[in-house]
Length: 292
Image (tube, rainbow, N blue to C red):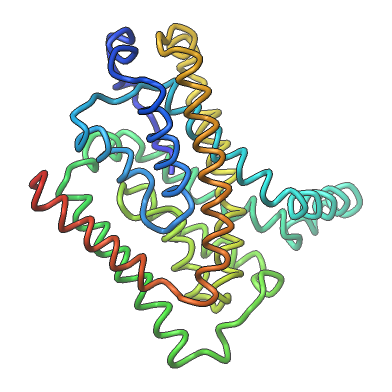
């Protein structure tokens, strides 16, 4: 999930140009694309990657291009869904505006509001106080355990009521998942992981919970990108080469597109235990290698 920036990027863009080459750009793009959609926390991985590699923060322009790539992958993969959502939503909005929040597009809009509100209020605290290794260790492990536990409980004890479709969600259910999405403002929790926990808690099937989670990624990522435009001058002054930016965008787009397809197929058969194990293993690696 894209962090709310506070302007604390590299003071010397030329330094970024020296440490970031095409292959590193592709690596960052692949990591962003995969971890944005798998419930393992993209923010944690993008915080950790420079620490493990011993490099610096690649900077705002590169961050924007990475997230633009994953946004494009969401829009492209679900292009038929978006056409249907906007067709229904705009039709109702034109004829009976009061019924807009009875449409799926209205549910997506309503579910996006909580994270936008919380992000706007707490963005400085999140960016300055919640990026330590100790926070990542706790949130990675806790988020993984919660996702696995909620899914296991639903499958073992409430399976008959855990196969709801997105159409059964309603605006209140969508807003509830939107509040779960707020958990992802804390690095390590994972936006997709938090919304999957919310969807499964409300009884959506694994695949439907994943689909709604992917729908929610588009507006929140788009909003974060628009928010970053307040640093438009910094974007224009970036010394990161165009080839590096394009490579980051392309690799995050392709990796994101592949990750969406993989997760939709994988979770319906295998559940979330594998992701929980990975998150706990990563938390342990951070504790042992980087310390807290």
